[in-house]
Length: 309
Image (cartoon, rainbow, N blue to C red; front, side, top):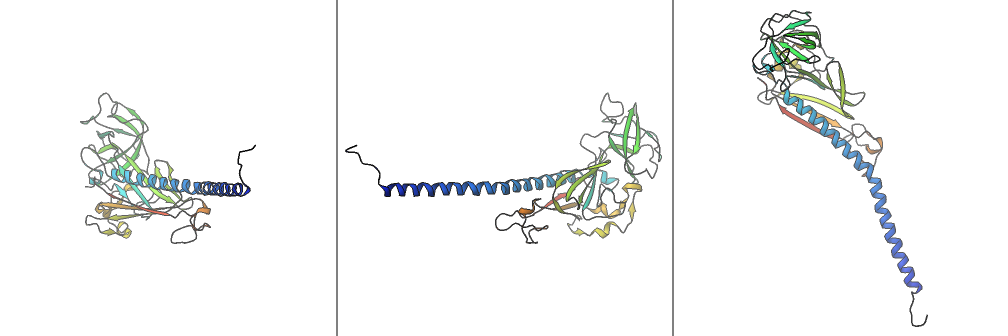
């Protein structure tokens, strides 16, 4: 058409070059974003596992020794133990910790009659604070409890059934080693152990007859114990005696001097292709290079045992 001007070949070439360049840049950004997505997702997962593990340990350590209206459990027996669920009394482990406490609002009573080893029933009295209208001062079938006295003896039991003022019980953490007199306390209680399963690389929590996974790909776990002056207490002081109590809850007397606990965790990504080769950054070196790596995370949890005697 006359009077109309079109594009020259040079203009078309320049426009095409600009379009190709911009398209390449966009696809490059898209490629980098897609390539980074697995790294971002795995990093987020690692940080989430760190938070879950740290929160679980901190929350339960804050409850350690929480007791009944008569006072914290540590006034009667050791409410923490530096050992795992399978360790015998007097043993110590740097990568395991047992905590004992009465949960908030837990049932509480006293023995109305003596409780000897092997006896299948505990007769309890209606103490002040027992919930009204309850059959056995608030205890229910299936609950776990601890019976303890002023001599430092304690035994964890399972409440199998309840009746008016009576609990049908069984031993849940080894047989009872001593007799408990009338007036000894009995309370709903938790005895839980945290430990590292090195083969599975898992932080696990054990209670009763089983355990469950708290966090995966936990490479290292250690516990440190401090006295009232914040001096580190070596584990050897917890295994040389003298020992208090008897049976499954027997412990070294030095445990009663612990005032704070530090838990240190090391977690890593479970993806080999995202771990580098530097052993200072990766407890389990992988084959990743450059920026496509996720370094291990080491975190510490410090808890003062505020319920300690």
